[in-house]
Image 1 (tube, helix red, strand yellow):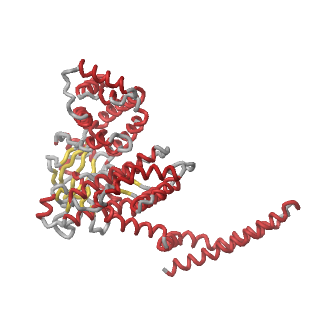
Image 2 (cartoon, one colour):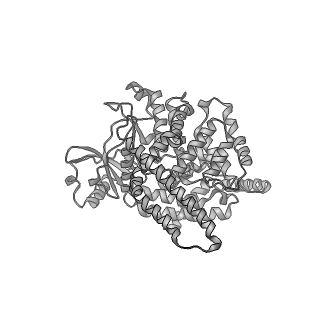
Image 3 (cartoon, rainbow, N blue to C red):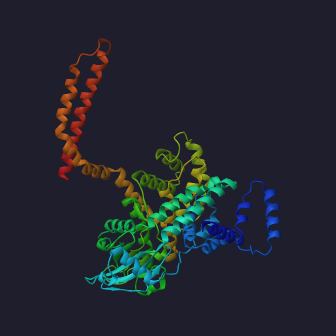
Length: 512
């Protein structure tokens, strides 16, 4: 079975001229020209007039949904791919015919152990959305709540394992035979794809992602998310609140329904930066198909997010790194950008700041020859990643995912409002976040957060001080007596100082 699939992949690659992608990257230009000429003469019936990126996209579409999803992942690795290929792969759409309703019902009965009519008051047989991994049906719970039921595609697991194995073989060959293959890290990219694809196969994980995002935006007018109904969720079925809205790509319809489009564009930017810098937990698949807008009721004009199979997470170090980089770029302080890389540990400690600064300036300064509203934050971040690789900076997967999401947000925002100035919209939020992290407000918040620990520690301080002071009763050797006495005096001072500071901080926190 696998050999036939491999033959089909080779046939599709041959028909779309993917061999030319390899030949175009040979080191010796003369040899490259001769090989390309020979290939064109020997296989003259192939139509290779389309650009290489278009042919690669078409080949992936011909190979099926798993390869389409792989191409979508590749489009996010703009730090590795040529821009023409990354841009073209970003156009891939996960359009897959729905599977039969009988199979969907069989999956539900398998998951619940009883007929579907005993689970739902009503269940719509026709799906409303279909993708490579799952499809969605509308239903009504016994208590009358309207829900969307996401069902994993039957038999998808062995198909994925089969195609992943082939991708791993192809990645190993690519890395061995292609001169530029090792730099592109194909095996690492396939491993990353394997991880994310298996995440999508666990609908309980997706439900947990949705629940976390909903909790993060509880009470918000910016973004509303469906409630997860856990009693009906399994690893192969996810049941959530049915959301009513208009797809965000239908701008004329939204405008006709009274939605303030420029405000909607600014709100999208604020949602993104709130997820990134406040929560460190962001929806990483924010393309138009997953974003709706509420047009009725109290939440009219609010975003509605769907499909939570892929989310990104950021540590405090990541958030600080990004915020300081964005602010430094806005101020064109390239030295600070270089310093932040080194301080955050992304660049080796031995990196020369002046050389790193010069490299960053050379690739980023051209951005600022244009009006700020025309500058792409996503592309600035991309160029930063590309430059960083020259200094042995290994870009972390969560930052690549973030850069892809930022490009989605930018594209969506400017489609809504071509005059959107992303920098102007984002800067106040970044400055406010930095003040909260580094200013007096940050100190106050940290004291409040640590007050419970200090309340537990303070009663033990006198005993710890007494133990430290009485430890000096053991005679020390004459040669070390003076040194030990000095250490004891220093320790005594530090302990009393710590006691005083902790007591004052606890008092301050209590008063607040």
